[in-house]
Amino acid sequence: MGQHLISYLGNYSMAALRSEFITSYRDNRLAARKSNNKVGIALAMLGNLFTIAIQEWSLGLTHNVVAAIRKSCPRQGRYRRPTDVEKRQLIEVIEPTAIRCLRRR
Figure 1 (spheres, rainbow, N blue to C red):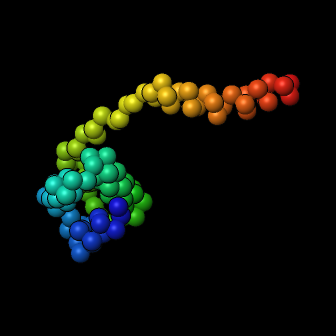
Figure 2: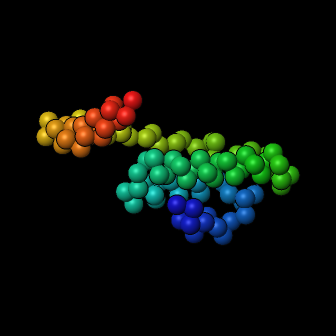
């Protein structure tokens, strides 16, 4: 993830980065069918880099350009319940271990 960020924005100094470059990166990654979560993590990493640079490195940056752009919303996570067959398989595997543990007490 970090490598793609470097290859896309690595030719710019932090002072030269503008929100237009960051939104272009975001839009290109989303167009490449990368997940909203993956793109959001990359933007969070870049935003954290700006925050650290402003607070600790005294680079003369005045604001975090990543904070100014709209973040893509993460999609709803998957939710699946085990089938009856899967439940039976789990019980078959767990039951002997549970019985041994109870006998040791």
